[in-house]
Amino acid sequence: MRKLTTVVALVALGVLPVVACSGKSYTTADETDGGAEGGVVANDGGTTTDGSAFVTDAGNGADSGPMRRDGGVATAPKPPLAGLVDMEDISWHNTAGAEPAFVMSNVALFPGVFGGVVINATWAFIEPTQGAALDFSKIDAALTQVDAYNAAHPTAPLGTKLRIYSGANAPAWAKVIGGGPVDIQRNPQGCQSGNCPLQIGLMWTADYITAWRAFQAKVAARYDNDPLVRHITVTSCAQQTDEPFVSTVDATSKMNLKTALFTDDQQKACLTGAVDDYGAWNLTNVDYTFNAFLPTMGMADSTVFPETVMTACRAKFGTRCVLANHALSAPLRASDQGIYDEIGNTAQNGPVSFQTDAPQKMGCLWVQTVAQGIALGASSVEVWPKATLGGFDGFTLADMTQLAAQFQTPVAVDPNPVPLPLPCSGFH
Image 1 (cartoon, helix red, strand yellow):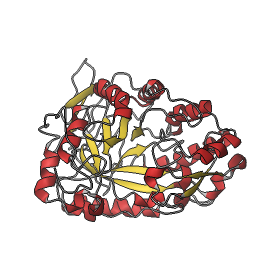
Image 2 (cartoon, rainbow, N blue to C red):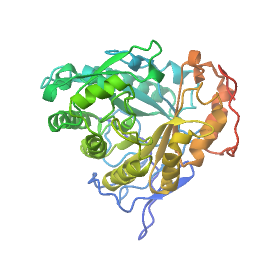
Image 3 (tube, one colour):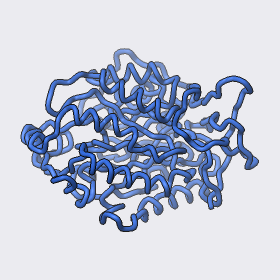
Image 4 (cartoon, helix red, strand yellow):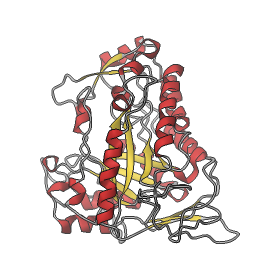
């Protein structure tokens, strides 16, 4: 059993419930996700009657949603993360077969500053053998560490975002479904050597999708009612990293995909169907990362298609659909401007989350980069930790406190920010 801590419920009789996140609010009128009835558990153990209004604001961008695992379970939709989120080191995914390691040392440097932390995992580790019991040991160990941190910092507890990589991190048995795997190369930005071979399964085929959805149902059965697990991220159809819309660019890799009968229409169907892949999650926020659509085989249609997927996500999950992007910078990346415009235009309808671009790619302009995200409606922003890459591990507590405070007191966006000369470092 697990115990939920305080959630402040605001319900106005006879009007639509409103969810407030870091100064942003949105209605929950059209939720069609079939989530559990009842309400968010209040500080006295009771629940609200309509079930969806909550406040995610507890100073420094951290939120006061259901957190503790010492005796209770989540019985209503969980509030989205708010404030700064430690994305953890992701350099492991540039190597085929590598596994992530979870640490609390990043957050521990800045007690009370963060609102959440990402738990990275892989399908390959959790389900190495089809039909066998799933291995949740790494995720459970990470949650135990977070729970211990929350016990030590009860006024600024953390929530978590669960990110299970598929694609090249699918188990070997899944990669051979339907006649796979397909050999591809890691995109240049993630491959310094110029030769980083990966293998992916036929993720666009019916049998593969069936296996992936069965896996998601098992993960949801374990963690959907865990109040610490606030977001599950969509990684369906991801050829390269965890981002579904990031396509493979290598010419030989594209030819291999074509030989495997992969088409742009199948890519679109996979990305649209990704919404249904997470249908077993009824209480957890479903976090979908968007980029401009760059078909593997054809010409880009920019943001027209991604907008249809955003609409499908919000139609299925209502305010539990979190629109996200993992390339936040100052200024905003021009190739994704249409995505940012659409996210900003619909932010009032549900939560928004960003991950900053790599520090070198955002010119180390931390304050302005986070300001850009907040201006677009973000309730949370994932940030890079690794000091050797220019991440926040090399910052002071005063720096991070200033950055987190922007969620309470937004900083004006500079229309013409000037990134620092590269290589850059430090807090700016």
